[in-house]
Image 1: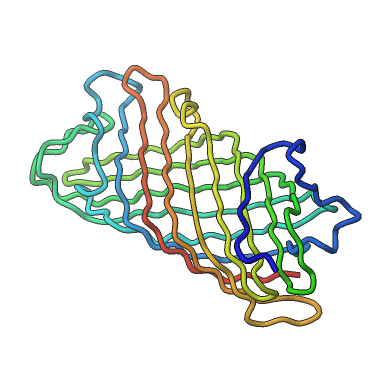
Image 2: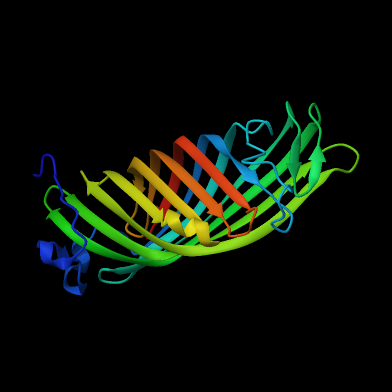
Length: 279
């Protein structure tokens, strides 16, 4: 039995890691198809900057921030599906909406989308950031002990993300900000999963969108999570599992206007709880 697996992650086949090919399909602990629903609770920080046509003076610098809008926490649902197409080759798809809505009172004057809000004005905000991820995955079988039900699996991911941003801020006397746009980028990621027994596993998951791309009209994103899952019900056809994890997520966007649209959204440290159905 492997008491404490120590893995050096080398992105390449020259490291001696064995790809999970068709002939080893039964050795993989990843199910053919997995459906999941997760809820994340996290404190929120950051800001959204909304100019008008990139004009100088049409937007306050790094404002409004979430705290002055009364936004301090988020509850984020996420739906996911993943599976193997054949052998080591698989796919993943996920959808989540980060919905931030609250009321706050300005302590200093604000300019956003060329609209001037005076100090002391109450604001009502409705911000939505929708994330859709789709991509290809490749599984590497690092260790297997069939008798003990123990294994270590590294799954590499390459895909794309679409970020839809909807920003609405309302004040008095018809003063309001209304802006929406969508951006996309490429994604790199991995999951390292240690199946400690037939029912219990721990994992590390990371996703990365190159942050430097956020300065060229594409979103930058970093997400990290460490967690565990437990299979609490199993039949010959399907499995039901419970997942719990802690993590951190950062989303950035900056376009190339003279005065840019800009988003900085940070969620964390976060707590995620979810259910999964595997076939």
